[in-house]
Image (cartoon, rainbow, N blue to C red; front, side, top):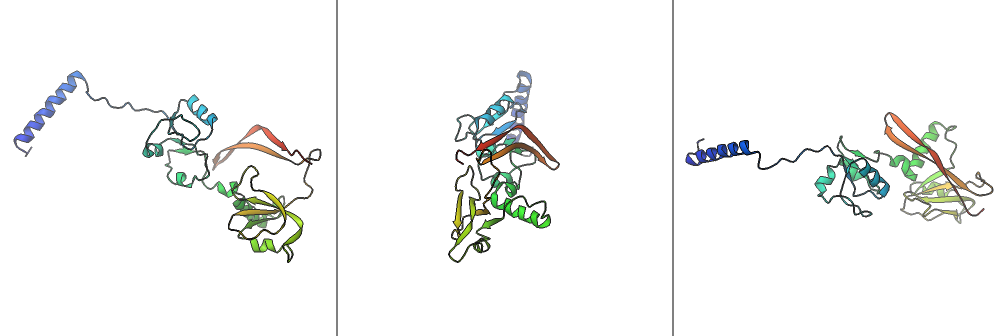
Length: 238
C-alpha cells in the first residue's frame, strides 16, 4: 500500500482478524436466506384470507385496520412483499409499482367490467358490432356524458311515462340506486341510467337475482373456475 505505516498497520490488523475468525468461526452471523413467502397485510380486510395465508406457512407483513396481526415494517419492506392482497377500491398506484415476480389479487384493466359506466360503454360497443347477440340488456345511458341524450327521453317538463333506474357508477350493495320518472338534473357524479324492465322474471311474484361465483386465475390464456354453489336473493315485498 502507498499509505506508509498506516497502510501496513491496517493490513496486519486485517490479516490477524481473518486468522482469528478462521479458527474460531465468524463473529457476525449472516442472516440465513429464507424462502418464506411474504404477504402484504395492510389492505386485507378479511380474516379468512389471513387464515389461509398462515395455513400455507406464509408470513404476514404489515398491519391492517381490521386486524392486529402482521409484522410491523417500513414501507420499503411492504413494497417488496411477494403477494399483495388489496380489498380497497384504489389499486392503480399499487399496480404501477408491481414487479414481475410479485402477485396481486387484481388484473389490470378490470374496471372495464367492474365499474358500471365502463361496462355500459363496452356493452354498447359490442352491441353496435353484434346487435343480435347483445340485445339482452336494457337501453343504457352513461351520465353525465350522455345527459343530453337521456334528457330527450322526457317531455318539456322533464317527465316520462317510462320508469328509469339510476345507479352510481362505483356503488355496491344497492346503495344510491333509485327509480324515477323525472329527468335528474345534470351532475358531475358518474351514474348509469337504464330503462326499467316493467315485467321482469319473478318467483312466486317476488323479484330475485341469481349469482354465480367464478375465480379467474388467468386472462391470457383465459382460465376460469366456477364454484358449484350459487346464491339467490329474493325480495320481501311483491
